[in-house]
Image (cartoon, rainbow, N blue to C red; front, side, top):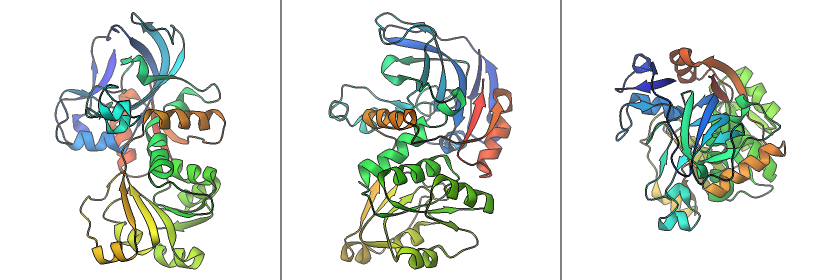
Length: 338
């Protein structure tokens, strides 16, 4: 089968499309013939060199396809079933998993980071990491929401506990996780302020339902927020050092900043006096628990949450796909067709 693997860290030149054997499922496992696989910023970080990534590594965390073989003991799926991949890797037996906190598993990992991922034609997964594909979406859309959808839902609904009527600032709506966040906040009933880096992406944010859209390169974000609502109750952060100071500046007394990433840099500063005096909260979040994934799938099935795919690439064009993502050209997700 074809697979995108890296044998060393670096630029797009380390991405290799190789022929490797098709994996075989063991007991309790499923082999999926993947039709699509999505890209995430995680792929860029893995390629560039996250510490601890085992090499060689098949890239990719999201995928969708048809079941082509099942191992002994699998009773929820049969050959031919259309399915989607759960990107989260968890043990099911540790204290956190038993408490329904799979994203805090003592051995937590993500496909394409801690174990071989989805940028390939076939993948073998434990039955628990496979879910039926919603009938109302294509395979391309099905690969576009698992990681970013559960990440955004976990951040907003479970970590920040957003409430109807609250004001929520979402940075970078053109990203995969950003376009999910706007929709989820609107589903809950929040007033959403979204930022974007181009006029076209601003129009995209409006189409998603944002109540106020700010061009974060041309406009003063803090000033625009002040005119709209004064301060915000929640900031959805995934950008890092480039936006952190403004995120804290626009946060209300008792407000929450929830963060899942640091694409522009991980080192930020904070004045603790403001934090405790204003009784604000900073929340970290990674992926989502198993229930979160179920809830996101339900929202997609109901048509409330709609994954957006701006552009697709073939597996052989993986280097161009990485460049496209790194240049922030996408709206929503970038998907590979296999």
